[in-house]
Length: 290
Ligand code: ASP
View (cartoon, rainbow, N blue to C red):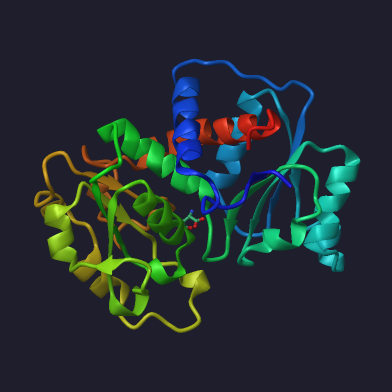
């Protein structure tokens, strides 16, 4: 099984190579795989990852087959392995999968076509991290020495967990902040107000209610008052610092409405970069380089 499941076993040179390749595509490099077919299999809700993979595949001239998990035999109890194995034998060239099961791909080791992980549980979201890294690289031209704080529901976030591991490996200083109930031991904690003043990258997270086993202790308005990024807080950020968010954003919770598209925000640029990075990932896998 090839493709992209996690960044943990991807060498740092390969990560930089993928970012450079995505930048070349963004700058007009044409790559095309006519006649290829890729299935998208999403067991969890998604807008950006799902449709950005679709746009990436269409841009590469690849036919997209959307597997409807509501009407497929998954509803008759078919396993993920048997579903993916079926696509392999139907002659599909790759499968994009999102699942709430952590490391679902471990049961797919015998599959012979590339699998592209569109997010698994609270563990990995490799293409999201790559597009985040691409956006940071476009801004600063380097990773070494940059300071990033990820703020919010760290404990339930595959984006935070993936980014912390890879950013540290690339020489960035990574911190976490937010309410105590959402903080885990994945990076050093820093108080929110201190983070705002000292970081090069402020990365916000949505409160991921659907993954909570217990009700959040504070109210939404308390959350916004204490940890929400407001215009006043943005004014305390370093001059060159940027705001990122994997989205979906919850305006008025982790971020104020007027901050979403302020001059420091790179949120929509991240989405645009997602298409290029996914083109680079799929193209590299189909070329046997991933
Ligand atoms: N879109 C991201 C994810 O799939 C972040 C989120 O849902 O809040 O994990």
